[in-house]
Length: 438
Image 1 (cartoon, helix red, strand yellow):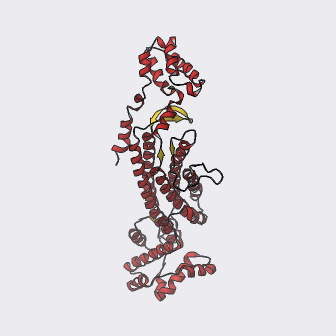
Image 2: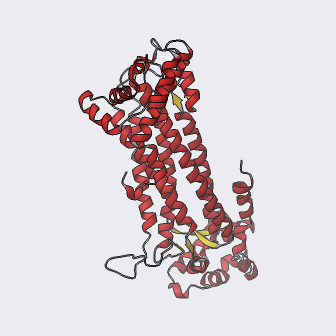
Image 3: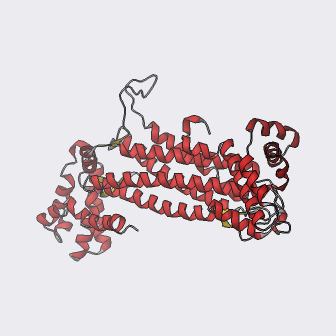
């Protein structure tokens, strides 16, 4: 990933230095286990820990000849350790090192992403409670539907990211396996205890059947989960982009002092951060199909998955880390305009109460079909009325409608235009989201 969309802690997980450090730990822990079993001298295992070093530039140079990264690493390691290096990697195969390392890296990446989600959840909760009673219009198909509150909107996103946190925890568990089983995974040349020992030291669990590699269905689930989280990021980002449109302007990204919106139009204040998040979400989701395609490998293994994962794993985790952090900042600093929300809600002159009228008419004895016709026919006249003349037009039309008057008097009609009726169960929803958290 380019530096623009990267954060240091996540980038470090995928650095060459970190990778080789993990490779060394796997090899050294395996030697400790071999020494416990009496396969190699205990003093040799001790020397390997004491003298084990590597030089990244030297490894790269060796690999130009070997065309094999693990062999290049082992060759360079031996230059530092000396004679006892002959005990390293006994009974192991390259995938034992590579796949176990990837598990560790994805596990560490998960911890960072979980922290990101926790921070976002805290922000969403704070702002949701802050705007619990801020009235706004709910939209379906982009058209005014019925009133909601802005806090309720944010509570929905909170619940979604809470589900995403559970998914990521499960994906972390799924990916945290270790394979030290040798060629084709039969343990023919290495005791299963080695795998158990290394797993325990590195906070992993032994893979049930590794076939030389860790099965890629695990990775497919992991990256699919990242894709789902990215889609949630985009859904919230898209909502903000829509709310910031000039014709709506119910909420807006914070525009800092000295910030510029356009090189040509000095007046512009664009939703650049949420547009950026939409693009980053696409990039994270682009890892899902390759991860699924990596599942079907030849026989016990091939390496068609390898090149994909070398790029996909860093890119997807680094990008999602950056996106979650950016989204948290957007929500923290989001400018919210309650007066505009209320003004927009009133643009249709009360049509948003149509369902209340429909229900009231049926309860008074009108058939649903006739009630629907009465409510809709008057509503259509309001749509055709210029916006600046719509205030109270709907109520007046209903009051003058002789068919409506058979079922509802003027006071009853007035009462049905009360906004409070839409919010009687907001507390119930908030209790479900926030008061029953695990």
